[in-house]
Amino acid sequence: MHSAATAAHPDMHHSETVYELTNVGKTYGQDVVALENVSIALHKGSFSSVIGSSGCGKSTLLKIMAGLIPPSKGRVVLQDQPVLGPRVDIGMMFQQATLFPWRTTIENIVLPIEIRDGQAAAENAKSRARELIELVGLKGFENAYPSQLSGGMAQRASICRMLITDPAVLLLDEPFSAVDELTRDFMNMELQRICLDRNATAFLVTHSISEAVILSDVVYVMAPRPGRVAEVVEVELSRPRNLDMITTPQFSEIVHHIRARLDEEAGQ
Ligand SMILES: Nc1ncnc2c1ncn2[C@@H]1O[C@H](COP(=O)(O)OP(=O)(O)OP(=O)(O)O)[C@@H](O)[C@H]1O
Ligand SMILES: [Mg+2]
Image 1 (cartoon, rainbow, N blue to C red):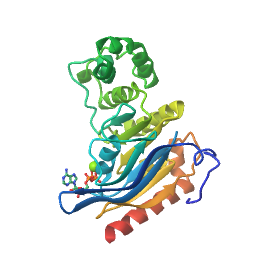
Image 2: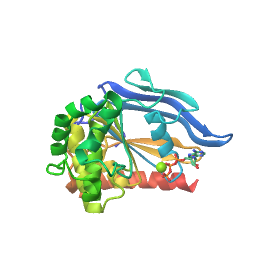
Image 3: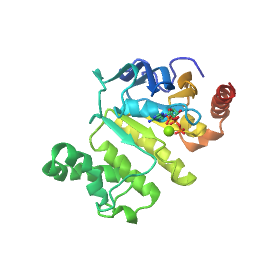
Image 4: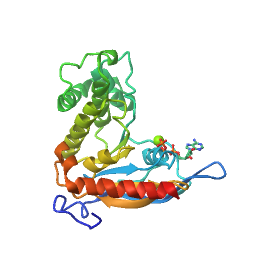
């Protein structure tokens, strides 16, 4: 499980590094060390997750990666450019869908284009938005308002809004934790399909070990106080993944290993 290249991803370790954090640290105020010495390299087309106990610094890490807050130490580089603030090549998705209730599905999806390039560009982006709507299975709901969508449908609209600017990296902070388990499983498989389709580079914060394992090529296991990467676990299950893999011994072994590691870190 810790060996290098895998049969399923012969190129993964050779493909270019899209996103690189080097010795990143974050201290809030005088003495809350939220992150210490975090180094992460995301390869193009890879799916990575970060898992760890509450307060270990996961959201802090994602906010730094998104350019929403600066690190206290270290380097954060996306596509060879230091991340100094929010960028168009970074897509983000949060726990809640955060759609504007007075805008239709398609109007919500083209909003990032409208903000960046203006009304006319947003109008032009609508054909692209329709393709994305079809990709996520929301066809027929283009002109629905958020109040007419289920939680899972609203998150699908959020996926489209994240993808409309064609970001280099997708940062996901527990995007499906507010939907029921069946929908969540389905959405995770959809997310995988979309990422594979687009060769997207994704980074997911989750509290669920099995979710991290089923989706990821690499799982970063974090330890608290100070928040740091305790172990990097490579998941060598083949792609595309499917939910049946959850019952395989290989899957159980990885989940068990990560759980033991988290328990160990929590006990210290
Ligand atoms: N704006 C802030 N000011 C001061 N301390 C903060 C701030 N944000 C986070 N912290 C502290 O930094 C640490 C890490 O917080 P963070 O929100 O990154 O954890 P998390 O891993 O996302 O937790 P959870 O799983 O509960 O979402 C915690 O000790 C928290 O109290
Ligand atoms: Mg958090």
